Length: 196
Image (cartoon, rainbow, N blue to C red; front, side, top):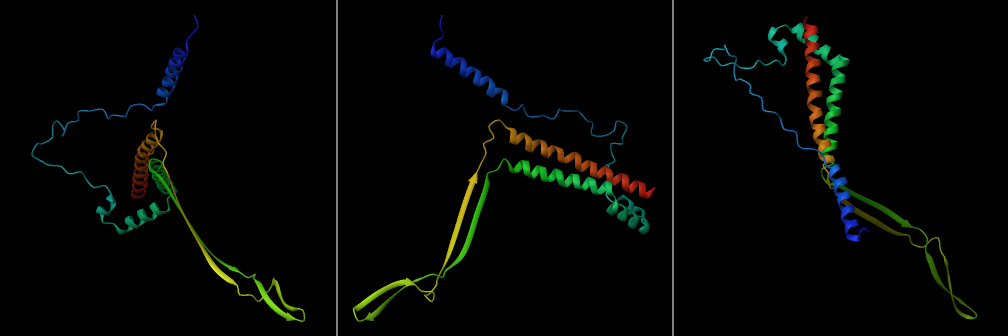
């Protein structure tokens, strides 16, 4: 039994569908629900607690020498500089990956001023044989000036059919938070070491 054209087409279409379905990016991440109590089990119900502000905690000690030492140590520490550079890199990567989702626009403009110094002069000479017209190049001919202006505009947009650009932007956004936390930990370690 020989396969028909329509059955071959159906098999090819099914194979293409299966291959394209394999290119689709997985489901969205959903944060799991975790039951966390609002307060400690033995905490007093009548007191309200505020989270302590830990930024610049050493200033609450009232020591100007300690403050200047910590500020100097933070500004000159290579680990802090490295952590700050990682945060800047993660932010730049996030902007780049998020930019791939938007259309790209490009505009160009140019202006040129030109001067044409060559001219052709036509002169008439009178002679014994009558009137004679002579054409030729004349260096003293009037030069012509002109300007040329050009402008252009291009726009393009990549369709993110399988979600690769969206997932790359999502991953870049999610990688920014750990680098920020690493910077905070480095700063806390540095300030604690200097204060100790």
